[in-house]
Length: 324
Ligand code: GLY
Image (cartoon, rainbow, N blue to C red; front, side, top):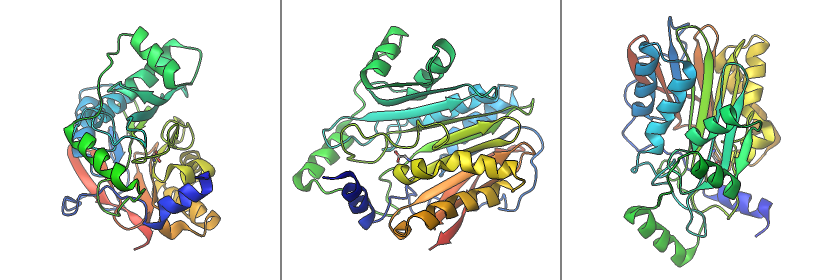
């Protein structure tokens, strides 16, 4: 199947929005919330435990870099989450392939893509950042690098995802359903006690994607971007659209021009909408945090929310959106 056709087909039934209906808690942080004093964590979707972990680390003085890594690792280890790390939904060949990246306050970055059999791709990405002259390792090279660095090989499928894959094989339909947990990503941006900002992003990508497909999550500027002078942003949703519009970089650049995080996310999402008339068929969402501790998010469709951990609270905030 040709790439464009595949992506269009993927969009026909709508991009999956991994909200489990009924799990959105009442937000106590308003969308217009102004600067948070002290450390702040923002993360995509309703990954409460991940932002809680990052918030706890930040509170005890951890660096933003450690907090984002440890925070997203919570979801990489969550077998119930079929969109990130272990328990992730496989590709069309039945292989779970993981994409992740991390970016430090000094602008350094590391990334892995199409990595198999390793539970914590974000930790491998950090090793790439810190121990190699490169930014990105993929596939077998990334796996060999991980094994050489003490990461253990393991089966990322489980009985549930294996059974679901078997069922999918009967029709081989690419059919994500809106508001059923089918695909998505944790992107997280944290500011620590020193005011330094770091980010991380990790995913198993689209469910039943083509073999070799890599999304936006490991692409610096697309799934994640940090500029410690300005702030950071992360994206989630249809990776192809996020890559084509370099959404996270765009949101940070808009903040550089003086936009609030919410306005920057809105304009980044509107750029996707302007450039693709098929936007009703997929979801893209962007979250951002600026140097003043302000947070924001915006999505094409209703159903997106994000976590904010600050001032001792860990809350899910309903995002602004373009179309219901
Ligand atoms: N946003 C994650 C992906 O498309 O793979």
